[in-house]
Image (cartoon, rainbow, N blue to C red; front, side, top):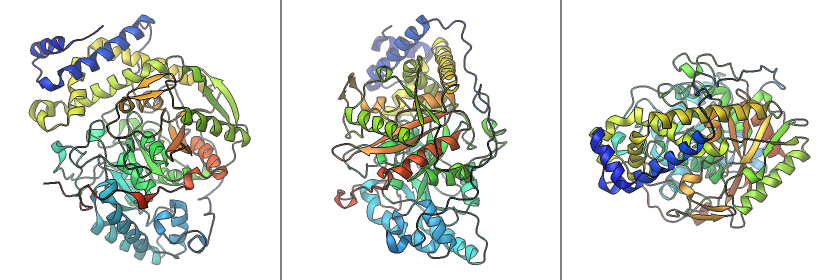
Length: 565
């Protein structure tokens, strides 16, 4: 079924929907893609399929408690890391920082000052931060230093500087969602994840850049730039979080993921990004989207586990997380994966993919086999239908949250997000029900696969970071729109609610990062991180640093995060 511009205009008049004439053709194309996919899915026979009904922790999956394989935090590899490896504190991962802070070889104030200096030098070029909270960071660092000196350490994150995606509410600190609609929003409360990480003693460096409302453009503050090549996208929508970690502007960061928004920028920036099991990290007070999770972005799998130890756990304020189990992530990182079963889908079923990405992912599979993992084929027959239909679910739920802005402030919303939000008004009940039925089928596919394997491996993104303004990529198997194709592998775990982690696994011939993705059963986040940890112990891709000396001159707002004139 093809929906034309005149159809959109007619439906808009009948429904009383305000649309911009410049948006009509794009909206028609979006709705046409949805209807054609719905028709194709419906033709396969969905009448007897129950729709997916989100109900807290991922339906159809149960948590299997396993005793920790080690205790405490794995020891830092080098007690004398400052002397032997680096004098730049921003080059150290969280595990090393934690050990050095605990031993009082360095202080939280020293570390925080180092990060703030790095931000001051590079943020104008990279646009990683929208708002930098320098005064608050130094005050928190001084408090942490004093507390640690008195013997009151709070754990491995105490004194560690991190960033928050600027869609996560922070009390008293502007939270813009990179949108003119929220440009002056100063929340009166912290999100639950901020509460937890603050209790763990982290230092807030600021609010990291993002796409508008997680799905649009970035014309208010400018899009973040990839530190490996500033002419290329860093991925999104947790773009600033990925850039900050990769470029040494934060030791770790917090992102959100509704279709790959943690894992895609992690892949494009060469860092680790975990989308946890749905609900395991509380989304309070923004728990309205059934495909969204909050998770860490770090340089190593161990660092992600350390952050998850603080972030995850039950929260009665978030219905999806009220009954989740307590967490013990770092304790599971033994680095041993002999006998772990890793499923790899038949490459013939993959979407069009870049040849260098394919080669790097194949090499990663061989590396896991060398570490003792058993690689087995898996089938995901309904995954191909999920790309467009996952968008239907996300956009309909987003419209339910933000519809009032289409009525009152549409002109203030960026073009990309406004068109997606407007298009969702033309989806039918049939469109939404078919999407939820396909979601159920995708869940069944993954549950069937996980009956035989512990994790499923794919590329994270089918291609490396692409240039700003690039609208088509020629790949083996066909041409793709790089902006809309980034989530072809990542959306699956948002539909199921199962965990997934992106792990750096190489570079292209021009020095761009490549990553693979591991997807697991509900509440087996720790298992995925252990596989990633084992891989990182055997490889060195995650230790590479971007060539920051070659960055272009600053073109972004200052690190104060002030609005441009």
